[in-house]
Length: 185
Image 1 (tube, rainbow, N blue to C red):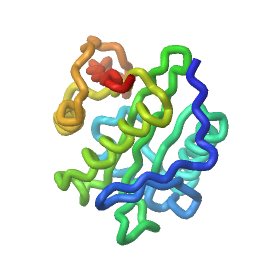
Image 2: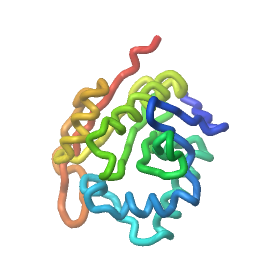
Image 3: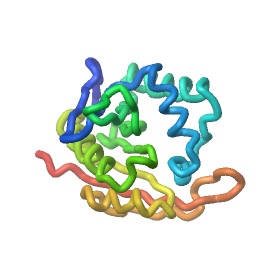
């Protein structure tokens, strides 16, 4: 069975980005992200309404990290590492199957700059090389074409299309599942 250990927290750097541990000082940026209707349009989760909601989300992230049940990095530009522009991580690790689900979000002012693709490629590499994952999955809203394109461009393939499998805000919604299997070993 998979036995991830995220202590010490593994910071990741790319050419432009620092993927770092989030902290309470990031709560204001988390509030902006998780309350932004454009950022959250295809993330069928409760919107943050205040700073306390953002802190509660950070607490969920920290609890998952402490129990090695998940890991989420804050995305920052290298030249401004204190300002969070997004998040990415494995929020659901299925240890007995060596599989994890990746999720991400990015501030709208940084869309269409290749930032999420750059971050995702490093997180995929970390998942396969450091966590010893066999496969990675991503569940997206069928209308989220930008996310589908990022996944396809980073080696994911569409694995499934579930019809009306998710109930959110009074309607049933479809989900597309993408996956990537390790080429390591």
